[in-house]
Image (cartoon, rainbow, N blue to C red; front, side):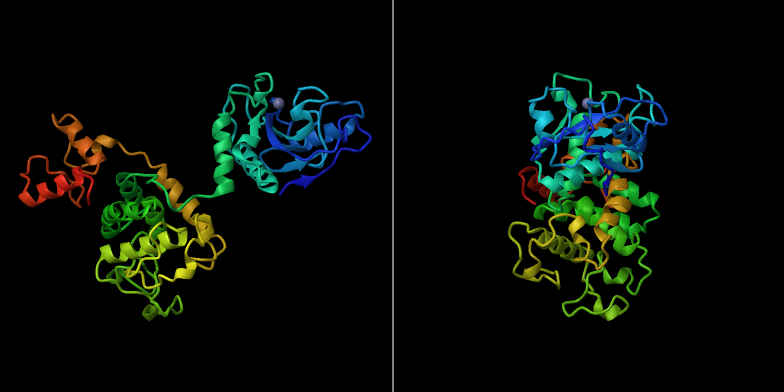
Length: 387
Ligand SMILES: [Zn+2]
């Protein structure tokens, strides 16, 4: 929500040339005084009739205030009275009052700036090219380079605008997922089924980290505790074809194996996301209805669709997926029985990274055990790119 508190029309810093916004120019105030928040800048802009410089929006840690309507120009870009940016672009100032000149910008202000910029981008359907740092005009150090990475800022804005796609490369490794689950008190079964997610989901283009995060939410990290238990092998609260109430165990699907349950979960997500080759002709997914095809391409759009809650998708992202993706694991401890000073450690790390040899479900590699002919056949098949 951007609060409006406009500069009086008589002020010189509200020039009033009509404008159809062609982009959003990002600034930082570079005023490092504690009191220099959005409110103070709004007062300053309204005060003197002879201030010339002005801009459209100021963002601080708590709010965003708009000083000039978006269909009027402002003198914020320093490219002259006929300047392309001065006459066509919206100017947004980011307050730097909570940091010093050498610090990274504080998170609340940064997040609010990203959110406000995303709001403006959505309003005018701007593309990436239409969001630029003031720096593009004569190389000015604005936004201040110590405060944040300007390209990352643009990426963060568009992440909010576009949402988190369900179909993508994996955004985390199995090892990250398992360490994260362990830290959250997951059951042994839930930790083990991460392997299945990472082997099944990528074949349909589904990001396994998203599916696993959703499963953590739906099953309470495998602890269940609702009307169904682990014996249903149902990782995602999947109902039967005829469906029914959340508190009716009979309304929930029982799967023959975890592999089948996780395939059904994957198929259902892939169908929602509009994946190629969907709907499937005979899937284990009991609710593979063709009319949901392409109805939720992002995690955000699962809200009100996969579950009635309006914050369902947001909760998967904030409470589960983000911490999973941010999990830091020591790659050399991928296997519990492999120390990094072992002569073969880096070779084992490589074959594991490429998925040629994945180790055992208990997290070990057993580096000195012999390989059977059938295991070798699996490895050779993977090497040739099959499944
Ligand atoms: Zn600037």
